[in-house]
Image 1 (cartoon, rainbow, N blue to C red):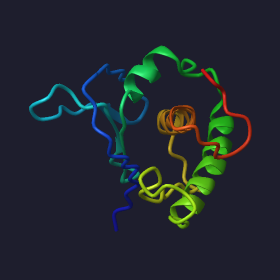
Image 2 (cartoon, one colour; image 1 turned 180 degrees about the horizontal axis):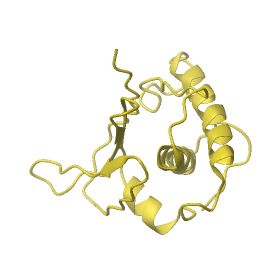
Image 3 (cartoon, rainbow, N blue to C red; image 1 turned 30 degrees about the horizontal axis):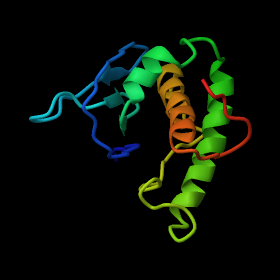
Image 4 (cartoon, rainbow, N blue to C red; image 1 turned 135 degrees about the vertical axis):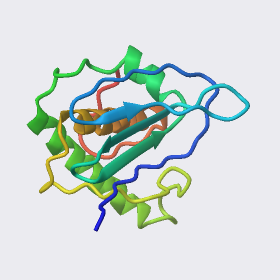
Amino acid sequence: MKKIIYILIIIFTIVACSTASKNNAVVSTSPKSNSGVNDTVRIANDSLEYEVIIIDVGFNTWLASRAYPRNYHALSYLEQKNYLYVTEWNNRVLQPLRYDPNLYEMSIDYRPDIHYGYEVNYLIYNYMIYFQNTYKQKLWGYVPSR
């Protein structure tokens, strides 16, 4: 049985900048038809059978210009933060009358008992920081304003 993690935030973009780094995962960007390039990050690992897709305006540009570099935070730090952020995210998905359903469209299947690796945790963590700063949301605790 194939387990798939989807983070699909569909907000299209015109601007593109891609950063790709490999660490037991495939990270790629996908083109958008007719109007430039889409700001899409795809992370996949066939041996663990998961896939993460992040589509959001300006995320790649933000990641390249404002995020802390890879290996700045320890893997355990990223895992702990991701668990807290994803738990609150999923709570908000279940409350569409209280939180904007256009922001919290889908739940995220992030399980602390699965070792996703550094790259996946790094990108999820940075997306959560980007999301909170861009959309003026606070999922949990201190949010760096990079």
